[in-house]
Image: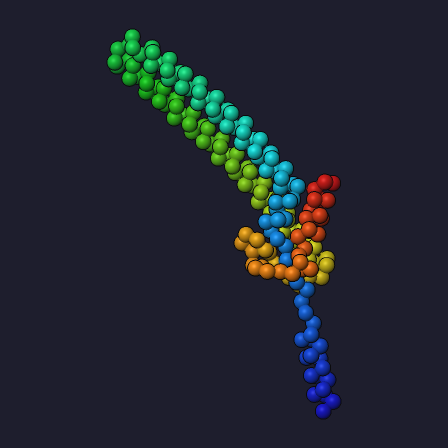
Length: 168
């Protein structure tokens, strides 16, 4: 009988132990994370610089096309067609160059964001291990928490750690 009571007591004790669970609001965390703001600001600056360059090149090309149009009135039809073909080739080349530059800019921006997300995940993992959490769930876009008590919300604590490390 004592063995049955002992086994029952052990089972009850292990059943009473609860997992330590917290959650992080992914959207709020990333929105307030200073490094993410800085990355976005740098990308915005690069994007604006690219847009100015693209507009300048496009405007110069338009002026060149207008000049050619004025010039071709005095040319033979064959010569005019050759000139327009050259201009068209130049336009395609410029378009391809600009498209490649834009794609490269987008890839760089995405790589920085991916690196940032990886850094945040590692920090959440380290926080969970250091503070004895069994689970830290994600809330927000793509998260699995539909409701969580504010007592279990770790967003501000992890945000503080991330911003402190970024400032160093």
